Image (tube, rainbow, N blue to C red):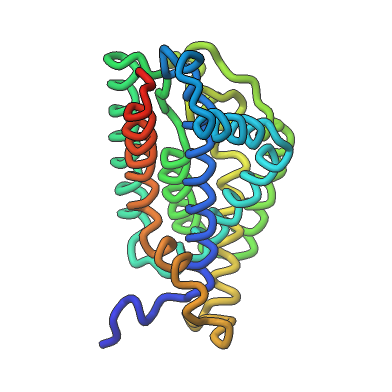
Length: 266
């Protein structure tokens, strides 16, 4: 019996890895741009290297590249996840695993907010959305496992996202049981990380159709392009869940250690 790694499709791991590494970069920029707010003596230290990094991060965060580019790579990640949906033996178990991880993330960010004063609470971020959308995709295919039906629902979901302007929703100042459903759907945003199910569900649904149509043989469509050049991205793609769960504490921890050593006080 072949090992699992030998059965993997390199271009899917590559795209997933590219997306997750760009997400890590995006979060690094967020951490750097908020360094001024997290440190009490930022304007007293005057470290040129740190200040240059903070300026670069701030310019990136407010740029058109970040505004539109991060959605492109999020949607690529979701499309690939939809394709991978067709390979999984139990997508219900996958959705439950993601849901548990989402609850842990919410608990950790709540503790950080309440006891460390860090305004990083996440109540419905990308992992929450991914858990719910994976479950909904599994449920819809249980109702009618027809690719045309799923494709129509996928495009309808994307259309709903466009109607509610998912890319520029108004953020709520507080979250309640009465308005939480609006956050889940994507009508309003809340928290340090936010992703509603519209239009994100649509990309996963469409991806599941692509998987059924183009990857029936569970084999790469571009085998001749595979090689050592893609190893860092393929590795990241194969470990995307672990990278997603643990990259932020590691990234912020490194920033904390380096800047503290340079005299910055948190």
